[in-house]
Image (cartoon, rainbow, N blue to C red):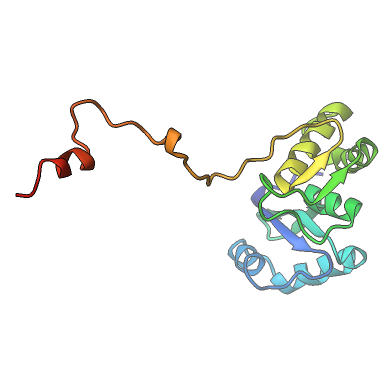
Length: 179
């Protein structure tokens, strides 16, 4: 059997069981010549059991306007939120931490995500997942990340910058009398 010639590869994040012809999916598929509703119906039937997950999907459109799709594992951030029972990550991850992930939980997430990562080594996969945790405001056992200190502070009189020599001060100008 001869290989089909690929016309376009479309990468989108879709909610399981909830693909619709609305942007960004509809315009991307129709520009490639795909019947949008056929794709949505097929995708929704296949992913109905994963309704709460955001699924990275790769749609391959061929020259004869047929298509196939590959569903990747859920987003790493979704897996971490599910593991910790969080609704969302931190709005300010460099200041506010929202949870703590143990080494066992980290390895569990890395094993699930391993097939989509660019490594076959569990240690490297855990480091990739730990980086995502850092960006979400989640502490990970065995990793130390500094939390930014507040930038506002009061200056004491001793800390005020000194004026260079030769520059008159307000007090010196007032001593000479009135003009």
